[in-house]
Length: 418
Image (cartoon, rainbow, N blue to C red):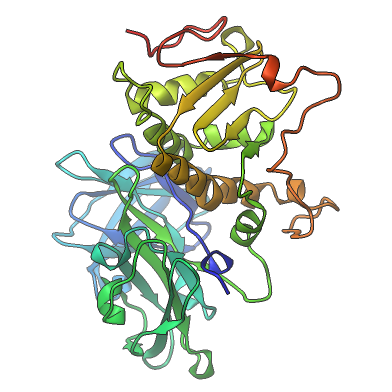
């Protein structure tokens, strides 16, 4: 079994502009916020027609947040409010509501300007009994695993396995015995007592024979943006393919061509857009100092649905990643070609294969199932290795190529020219 056959990671937009994760608590529902610090902000919105009370109990890492310090906020219909945060160190929170449709968001904004959004998980996420896996972005140096320990009658017996980036392994770690109900964390390298290179798989395996339960998350530094991020590990099966299996299996070894629908979905997803833009501004063509924000705005102008400022083409696949460039085809016969060095070409390919495409495929499975079913169909090729175009439309060779850093695309004013 290769690394990608296990799992890759999902990602979220981080940084100064925060887009927080949100879930509805529901009537007498409960959620876990798995990681917070003293700079965390937890906000609730009452989307119900009656007044409700939200209660969050906070506890330091290594303790049960259900037994922690309580903070409450009472909200009238349509009102939002911020829950007080008593934490002075890293911790977690357990949140309940007295009514329907309370929407909870959480984020961290540190004093140095860094920050991240925090996934808000159903409380039952800790009672997972299946193996969960996540890809290590940095290896043992920075990665931390956060464990939500399940509600069992005794300590949860947890095993770990690691696979190398090339699928070698598994490498086991010493068995851990974790008290029920706590949220705890530890460095992945310390868990295995061994270092692993970036791209390795960390797998958390509850010992089902004694009804052990646990859910996992990875806290890491993005190698693309340098931001701190938190992502949930995902259940995987050796028999049921995942969106990561599908994207890894079908991602071409040669040129990649992205569909119109994929381009709109990926470039409108905040984290994908930021990470793609971060790589593109490292282009040797960028002699004018184009920033990531400027590149994001320029890419968005082609997928905003406004024909007056140009859109990506719909007569064939509008995105190409070849051996030297990232290319965007637009509907006026222009090609915006951004040259990249070899390491950034590989970074872009990896970004699409392990992040952008899995994120899109996961929410559009019928597009990748030859019977239109809402599940992955490994036998249904997405044709990412072929430039798909409608009959009797001009080939890309007849279009005009323009550098986005030096010129304006036809009928569109680019913000990248000084």
